[in-house]
Amino acid sequence: MGLTNQLNLLAAPNQDHIDEAYAAMESLGIAHLRNAGYGEISGGERQLTLIARALVQKAKILIMDEPTANLDYGNQFRVMCRISDLARDGYIIILSTHNPDHAFLYANRTLMIYGGKVIADGTPENVLDAKLIKVVYGVDVNVEDYRYGSRRHKLCVPINGGVGKHR
Image (tube, rainbow, N blue to C red):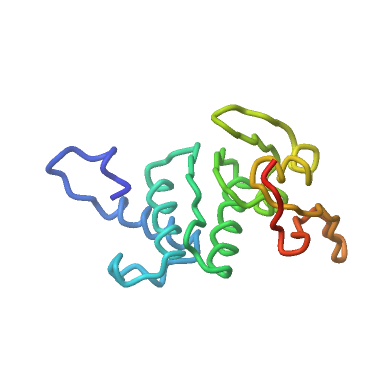
């Protein structure tokens, strides 16, 4: 399906096209799914399949609307790691998420949109704070520094279950 922009209406993919598709699947860790039906694979595998399709299209800018929605924790992690790898490989990734921790862990720039307007723009560490998260999500959090070995980033930790008055 990723080749529809490269083939005319009645053309079939040649071996080079098929090899490109398998290479994209391999790069995302889903080569073992090459003969699986789309309805037979998990939600995380489906997301990675859609990303592979974009890679075969030779897209250098990937726009993703909540690529981890409805995925379990493990698949969220696997999808976000693959997306992060693509960014390191030179792809431009524009991704929407409702999870501030995704921004802290994977983003180098964050736009916070609320009420249809950009209300903050910058690095996740400079943009996302407890006050802004309370305004946007109506949740009380502490934004904590997390360190593990040489790795350092911030995380949102809900206070008292996170429930508070909205604004």
